[in-house]
Length: 129
Image (cartoon, rainbow, N blue to C red):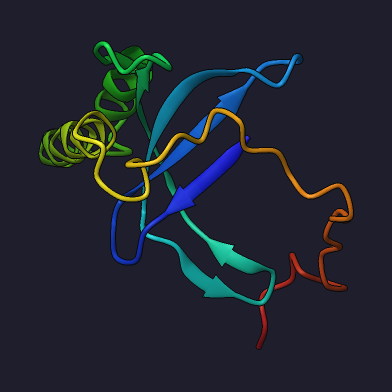
């Protein structure tokens, strides 16, 4: 996968590749904007997502049932859900209108072979203080 996050934007766009390395979807992950942390970056997932096929012929919601349940349990409010939908539509437009960085073809992107897996810092999961 290849993930794009944008400053102060409550979604990331993840390009999913299958086992053959072919692009199979654009995935708009609704989430809190990234914030720096000891481990790198933190975010909170908003459950609702958008999927877009590689030919960008349309888009659809994903996990609407999970968001409904979270609202029913009081985790998110109806206002939160409306805000998530607003940003989901904006994320879909970002991809479908081919706004940067989606103005180029990412279907042939591959990670650099020399890249190594990152190691988390020691005690990354323990809050400072």
